Each structure stands twice: as structure tokens, then as C-alpha cells.
Amino acid sequence: MTGRPVAVRRGASPAALLLVAAAAAWVWLVARWGGTQTMPGTMGLAPPAFLAVWTLMTAAMMLPATAPVAALYARTITAHRTPRMAVFTLAYLLVWAAAGLPAYALAAGLDRATALPATAGTAVAAAVFALNGVYQLTPLKDRCLAKCRSPVGLMLRYASYPRPSRDLRAGVHHGAFCLGCCWSLMVLLAAFGAMNLWAMAALTAVITTEKLAPAGHLVARAVGLTSLALAVAVFWLPALAPGLTGGGMTGM
Image (cartoon, rainbow, N blue to C red; front, side, top):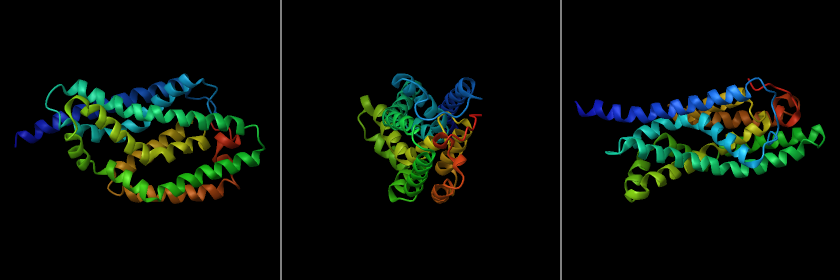
């Protein structure tokens, strides 16, 4: 009876630290971008600045749903827990930081698209919604989501990694599954607008619900169907995609 409470305490601390880190990222985003008008593309940022903002944004959005996995991984660590969990978390965020490179390329392309007629922006928005809608219903999405929802098998895999690189490899491996699960949801920010904090909060809720709620897999499918519906509706309501149609929504 005494061993279980100790295990819970050991797992709770890393989860709490990740939630604190996510909260700090949200505070910075709100303080820096809150109240500003939705902006398209790269927001006028150079690549290094864009990647820094992107990494903070993904930390704010992804760490809440990752905290339980981090807590479970922490239970497998018997010594030097804090520095090892720091390596695991930084490796996880490194995957999302690397994803910022194609995200910047996409954003730069959307910057050029703003010079096109409004109908072209609407068509691009429909494509973005449709892309997410289709991906949400694919077996690959299901596989990646299953790994995030039931990570016990991953813990067994990570235990087989050699000790010097275990935390780094585990963080990168879990980050890759998380990226595979959520990349199309992040692409939706192209339609909703960069630094649209309302959209970011809604997507954070979706991501967290998909990964942690008992019916999360059904939520993922419902989001996919909703996204497909938005791909059609945006032609009649272009303001659904202010980042591409100039709807002018504010960030928060």
C-alpha cells in the first residue's frame, strides 16, 4: 500500500512542471499577442524569430496533453529524475521546433497568396480544412493517436534504449508520434490566422480531449467531419478563415 502513493508523487511532479511551463508559454503569448489583429503567414517575422514563437506556441498547446505521458515516463526513472525529465521534454519540443521549418515555408507561401484575389484565399482555406478533415479520418491518425492515448507500450520500448541516450531518444520518439497525431490540426492555424489566440485555445482543447478523454478517438473523428463541413461552408462564410480571407478577427 505504501509503494503506490510514492509512485504517484514521483509521477505528479514532472506533470506539474510541464503544466507550469505550458502556462508560462500561454502568459507570454497573451501578453505579447493578445488583442492584436489576426495576421496571415509569417507575421512579418524572420525565420529565427518565427521558429522561436512557433516553439513557444507548440509548448503552450502540446504540453498539457503530454503531461500524463511525462508522468508515466518519470515513474521509470529511479535517479536524477529532474535533469533526465528536462532532456525528455526538450527532446520532445525539439521535434516540434523542427516542424517549424516546413511551417515557415508554408507560412511564407501564404504570405504570397494574400496578394491573390479573395476567391483564391477562400479556395486555399477550403483546401486547408479538407486536408485536416481527411487526415483526421485516416488510419495513420488513428495509429498515432492510439500511441498517445495508451503509451504503456512506448514505456516498454523506451526501457530497452541504452541509458546514455534513453531520455533524448524517448522524447524524440514520443514527439514524432505527437507530431503525427496533431500536425494537420496545427495547419488549421493557417486558416484561422497566426496568433489567433481563440483558435489556439480551441485547438489546445481539441488536442487534449483527443489524447486524454475516454472517447477521444471519437472526438478526433467528429473534428474531422466538422473540418470537412467547414471546407464547404467557407465558400459561403469566408470569415470562417480570417487568416486567408481577411476576416479581421482579433487574437483574444
